[in-house]
Image 1: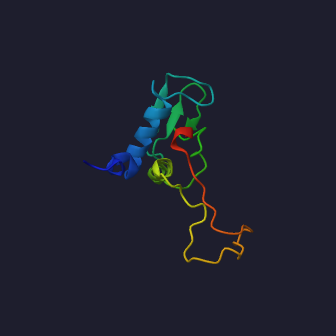
Image 2 (image 1 turned 45 degrees about the horizontal axis):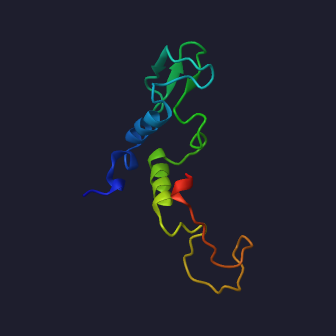
Image 3 (image 1 turned 90 degrees about the vertical axis):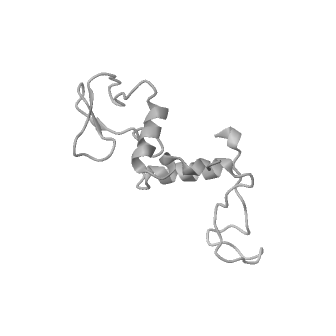
Length: 124
């Protein structure tokens, strides 16, 4: 049985865009500015997933209006991180430690210790 992380949208940027489009636009793309569903065209020679609305003449991608909009991190890496955070039973450390330190020494951000952030997969 193959791992869930072996699916294409975890490793291929084009597959990640296709997966996000299927999630955000189940009935097809729509303009985030004017809401038009028709006259949406792909922009040739533009960045990946770039589309143009024929009504308001604005360009947009599927990332507009999501948490991914201003990120410079590739979308497939976001998918990997989200999957790992939601599937971990013990949580993900908010501040990964390269070396252990004493509990009474403050962290660089002012905390005191090895606090863990746990994510409940049911709350996502």
